[in-house]
Image (cartoon, rainbow, N blue to C red; front, side):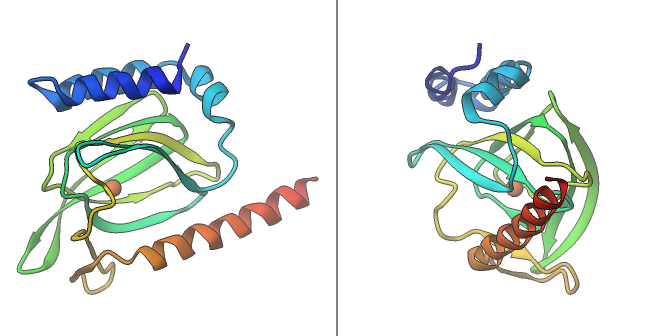
Length: 186
Ligand SMILES: [Fe+2]
């Protein structure tokens, strides 16, 4: 059964492995194979949001929940990432930056029970194409909250500083719509 403390310990150990991404992938894959266990430990995902499970300069572990239809601009993390979905679906588009402009490389859909990794130079945009919450465990091989992250405008495709305020507002708007939907459904 999935246990948060055990998962954090396993991620710390994987972070110190000689092949940290591969080792972390195995830990996350094992976790998201137990969907019921994660939901039992972390709660049924009902709204968009972020839970910080662990945070240090070497390792950040988050539970991220995308509200229905949520879209994230192309962004970087500056550290490697391993992402494992336990509900829903997310459509990733990968980009590279050339002269501060994002150039599309390709895409990848992730579904519940699936795990994907990105290197520290990766740039991706994400969409939850479903009308339900998409929830995932995100493990980053460093300080996800460190300054210096970028995002790329979806119209001009130009790079700018990551806009935390704008992203938080997006969650609030999406969750307000969800609140109204739940209320209407009684
Ligand atoms: Fe990301």
